[in-house]
Image 1 (cartoon, helix red, strand yellow):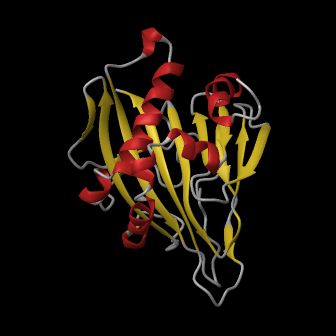
Image 2: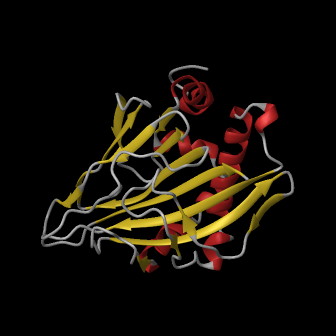
Image 3: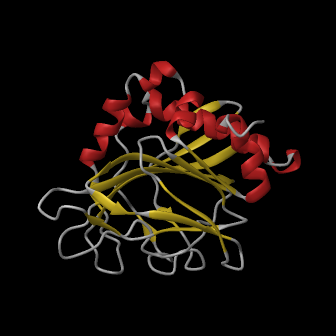
Length: 242
């Protein structure tokens, strides 16, 4: 494990400090090259997300799609569409209710890029979980998010503020960032003391989080040029023991 090889350092960093930032070049090295040849097609699906109508702050700046998978020794299997639920202990703003989001399109749920990302996450998260705690199959949720600020309203990537997701492991992967300022990710310990911060700037920049050990949040984003469209697209993947 060397400092000039971020991909090989990832398990150690995540184990030691509860989070890790992985630059796009390193993330790319972990994914299937054949799948990445179709990245543009995968990223373009963020142009077709549904409006998030569950925002308790009244915001209309977030679009998303959602899907649920079972991932284990038997492979990757999509589950029937179901609601996303978080208790108010984990999401004081929007938690406490079942939220039915627009489902991820079939061609994206089966897309080689997504399958490669899920396989990388499964190998990593399974290996970092103590043998006695590894499930036969993980409950995995994926979220396609687009945050769109406008001249009258900042976009909030994490409107609930500093938070945990109530799962075991989290991946946040940048897909696209257009005409956006700020959007700094910060990581905090369970006493809410800051451990580090970074900005996802390039497609495939990634943050890996041990959700039981740290909080995470992202600062508000705004358009650099208010006259032009602006968005921040991310893929969020969560792994939870069933």
